[in-house]
Image (cartoon, rainbow, N blue to C red):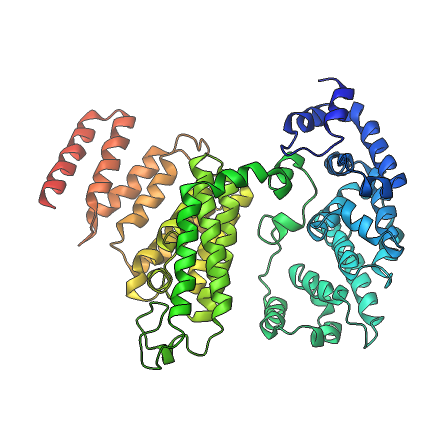
Length: 525
């Protein structure tokens, strides 16, 4: 594709994302950069014309994201000039150009194109005539630069301290909430004393306690692969991947989904939930609660704000329904994103309602799919990924399962043991072999006859794709330990693996021996 042809395809908005043109632009980075900068210059000089004309010029969006991916510092001043236009009568036009998602993307765009001009950023952050949310987004730019080694810790601590010291009592700008957030995420313990100055702005006392807990936790470690760092504190690096998720390129897709059986079933379940509430508003105190918990109404939902849970449950159902629709189309990235969003709301519901098990959640809330099912699907998606950030997300998932649900309860034994296995497996894949082994062995000290602990460790070394750790002798010796343990169950799984390992080692006699043991064990069961 010729450069001029690429530029023409990137000038105007179309319902379908011009993926090929974007990919070609990335291939021809050097040749197309001047053309993209020209698009930005044209945009800056023709804001009103772009805002009012009907041909939907869209080149500025493609240009700024591509230039950010290229780390083109020439685009930085364009963004600065655009933000500073927010002071005058062009405020609506600037919002139109930046877009509704500027809090998410603006700091990443600025950090990706950063040219070293700190004063330009200071002037925006400290300008009280500008939109407070834009100022807060620009402040986050420094957090991204710090996490990527461009700014040192002393710089960001000193600047935050300066802003806090200059705060007027009557100034309740969101900027100070943003300082609080960044202080928590970056564990800026140097600000512990002065941060009290903005506590009065934080209504959520749990949020304040979280910050204090982080300050007190000497083991706290920033990990850029964990939420919130991965999605919010990284440079722009995948323009196509980012834009694929945008609603403006998914209208046709949404129309297809709305006509699907998945959506029709989801809407039916949601409407039933609403009808149940409307039909049960006259419940007596001692009647069974409408929510299906099996408890009396007075001891369950009588004094609750039902709208909060209902809104979250509807959102969860929409997420799960569409995630499963995406997975049928083999669009795993989109399905994964929806599972993640749904899980955040499930965590909130469980904490707010003191729900201590997955089965309790499923009994209480009838949804599009049971939590038991889709949580495992979410984990399976993460398990299939080798990307470091997805592995950390998997650890985060199982940490939160352990945090929310009472896994010490015998009824949750399956989930307790699964959490141990999945966390150990993930640590191993992240290269933390000793830590992974310790997780399994600590539980084996408590329950020696847990056969799946031995199987889990053996499987790590019986994987040809992992050339570094592939060690059949080690896998064999781990499994052989189980034969010395009294009252151990599920030995058929051990015998099956030993039969396979001996076969790979070329010991046909031993392979036949364990094949025979497997048959005898299965028949006894």
